[in-house]
Every structure is written in structure tokens, then in C-alpha cells.
Length: 311
Image (cartoon, rainbow, N blue to C red):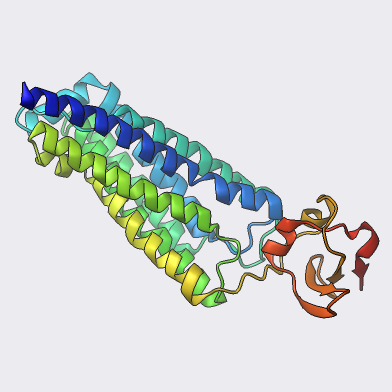
């Protein structure tokens, strides 16, 4: 009875943790999309990260959907794992599909919003996408021909996702380093991602403990690896944002972020820098202080209809 009660409580706790990680990880996609929309710009955002993100979550969605819904794949998994069921849960399915939709939307934003002339997908990333797609097509052909199983294709896709999860963050880390700034990269995305990663690993370990099958962790390497890599890189991004590069000046913030805001509490003047269509400095009339306009200033709002001056 005690064992059954403990397992029942453990399963309930697993469901709670699972949906908590789903909420945290899913919510982590919105701050970046909202920031892009407010700025009407994707400057400061790595194109390599965006394109790799879409490919990665496409692979992860196929993996989770197949493991959760396909009886054939589930049976193949049991034969390889001593009759044990896989540990893919419904919240894993919802998260991966939702992530694919949101990352695709962010990719769409890069096509319609302003970006730097040199802000493009790099040749190594294009080559990686090409090789990954070609490899997946070969494994798919082998599974279709019956020379391998469908689960082999899914594991191949999971390894693509796992590799991309490591590679995709590197260009953004370097971009932040090169610009000595994290402007254009949402820290709220990182904080939520860190929370989701910790909860995701927690659910996987708890499920393995409840079932008494620790091979379930190795049977779902992408979930464990994704959580671990997310935590590791999130710590790097938090260090960059809060410790190394604390400058928040955004020289690409558009006029609309200011012009569409309501009345300001203080009378301020926004100056337009020569040759740019962005506000680059602020002058307080009472203190006579001039400095670059930060994202925080623009988010607070100004009544520039009477106090804006353009050069």
C-alpha cells in the first residue's frame, strides 16, 4: 500500500512538474517575439540561431509525436528496452509542437523586420542544415525499405536536435561578445528557458525513479541533453547580461516605440542622430543630461509630440 501510494504521489508530482516545465519553456519563446515586434527590428539576433532553432524543433516534434502516438514505434522501443515503455509524455508533445510554431514565427519576423546588411545565415550553418537533411533522408529511405526500423530514424532526428541545441547557442554567445552587449536578445527568454530546463530534467529523473528503469533516461537522450544544454548556456547568457555586458543602450530602437507611447511623467527630449532613423540620445530639460537612449527609456514611454527634436 505504501509503495502504491508513493508511486501514485510520484506520478501526480511528475505531471505537475511536466506541465510546469511546459509552461516555462513555452513562455520562453514569447519575450523574444514581443521584443522584435516592439523594436520592429531583429538587429542583435543571430540568424544562425533562428534557422537552427526551427530545424531542431522540427526534429524534436517528429520524435515526440512518433514516440507518443505510434504503436509501431512504441513496440520497437519495448523490444529494445526489456519491455519498458518510453518516457515521452503528452506535455513533451505539446511543448515541441508549440516551440516549432513559435520559432517559425520568429523566423518569419526576420524576413519582415529590419536587420543589418551583414546579418545573414552563415555558410557553416547552411552546410550543417544540408548535411542533416540529407542524412535524415537516407535513414528514412532505409526504414521505408525495411533495412532499418523507424525508431532508428527518430533517434537520428533526436541526435540532430541535440547537436543543434549545442551549436545554435554558440553564434549568439559570440555575437554578444563581439558587440559587448546583449541588446536585441531577450533575457526573459533565458530566465524562463533555465527554469524549463531544470524542471524537464527533474521530470525525467522522477519518471525513471518511479518506473525503476533508469534506462529510460538514455532512451530519451534528447530530453535529458536538451535540459542540460539549456541550463549550461543559460548560465553563460545570464553572466553576459548581468555581469559582463551591462550596457543596455539600443541604437536601433525605432521611432514607433516612442511615438506610440502615452504621456511621460517627466519632460524629456529625444534627439535623432544624423544619418539614422532611430533616437540615439535623451536630454532631460531639467537636468540638462544627454546620453544614449536605452530600451528601458523607450519602454517607459515619452510624450514626444511636444518635446522631440530631429536633426
